[in-house]
Image (cartoon, rainbow, N blue to C red; front, side, top):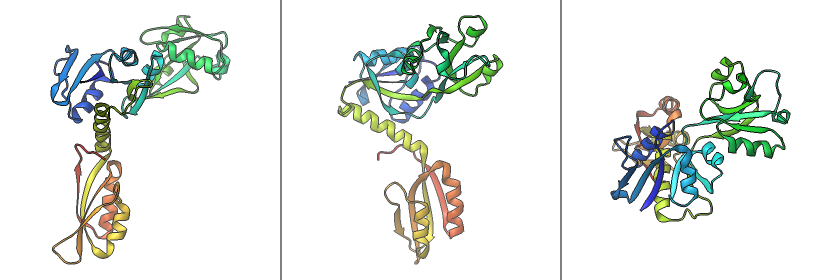
Length: 282
C-alpha cells in the first residue's frame, strides 16, 4: 500500500485534497482525521503539518508527499521534488527599511529574521555573505521595528504588508515556490504504484488546463481549422451525413478557448461546443 503525506492545514491543505479527490482518491470528511485508508486504490493518507512532510518522506517512513518547495528546501531533509502541482505559488524575498542595503551582498555583519532559517542560511552561504540568521515563527515584519534584525526574509505576494510596515523588497527572489510532490532522494520513481499516482495527478493538471472542443466545418476549410485546433497529437476528423461537411474534435487550452471559437466561427465553423475534461491519461 502506497503511503502518502498530505498537508493537514494551511494554504496547501484544501487545494491538495481537492486535487487528490479529482484524481479519484478518497479524502477525509473530518479535519480531525490524521490517517485515511483508501483500500480501493491501495493508498494510505497521512495528514501532517506541511513543515514535517519532507522530514517523514526523507526518512523513508512515507513513500511520497505533497508540500511546498520552500518547505522542502528549508527542511534540509533527504527528499527531492518529482512533480510540480501548479498551486500555492509564492515568492520568497528579502526586505528591509529603505537605505539599509541594496542587495544581498550588503548583508555582511547584519542579522536576518525569517521563518525559513535553513533556506536563508544556505542562500547567504551560496552568495558568500556572513550574516546571522534568527528563526522566528509566524509573521516576521515586526522584527526590524523591534530591533531583532535589520533584514527579514519572507513569502511575498503583493508586497502590501511589507509596504505598510515601512519596508522595501531587496534584490532578486530567493526562491519561486509552489506545491510539489516529493520522494525520498535517490529512491526510484519507477515503482508501479508511484507511477500510477503521478499519472493520475498529471491527468488532473491536464484536465484543468484544457477543454474539449467540437465543431462542424466545410471540407475545404479543414486544414485552416485544424491549424487553430491541432490537439495534443492530432484532432479527430469525421465525415458528416451532410456532404461536404466534417466534424472535428480536439483538446484546446481553456484560456484560449473563446478566441479560438471566434476564429473558427469567422472561418465558417458552426455548432462549436466546448466541454470540460474531468480526467485524462496522455
